[in-house]
Image (cartoon, rainbow, N blue to C red; front, side, top):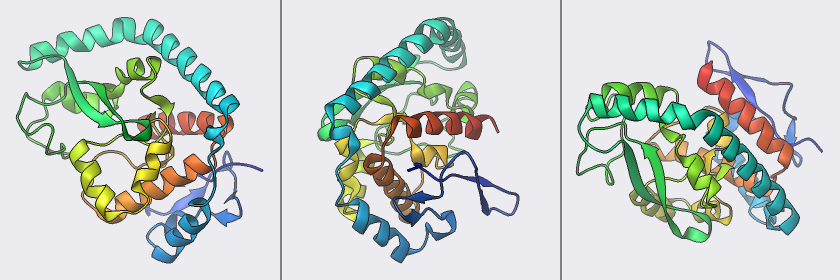
Length: 249
């Protein structure tokens, strides 16, 4: 069975089917136009909420871990060894403060870990309580570039290497956001069944950045749930490729 259905956005804001991806999730058509349909979302939840994740199998966990180690090592040595130092210099020249931004987030089983990012905002007391908006005045000049191409997330490859994160998985949110979403979305905590990722199914379909729209968060959770329940190595490769296309398109 093929794994996932993806859509490419056209000028009208609708989505058309991408031949790289499959037509159904276990018999349920993935129709982007239906993501705002509560009956459709509930239907997906009723089916996927009762399925075990393939990542519960030790062999699958081993496959995924080996992929994470190999890719993170390759990128850390081949890209970040010179790329990140360059941006560290630019960050330090652009504004006062440390080059890295460290923040507590939740990983598998709801445990806390220190998520590493390149600093994109001026040092401020609200960094852990108020997420940055698109035109946030706290974002620095170099920070705008880092955020536009998601370069600020690259240090999380170290989180992947030490085992706190995976290359692909549900994105980890700020702790204050987790507390809010856990209260309002019943299935939100199911995201903790797997390691958080640098990118995920939702991000590969264009769901980037902060939103205060609960419906949008609901849609992301649904996509995370589908990923967890229908994981395959092929799906990870497709999500990774799709993410690159989404960032640079």
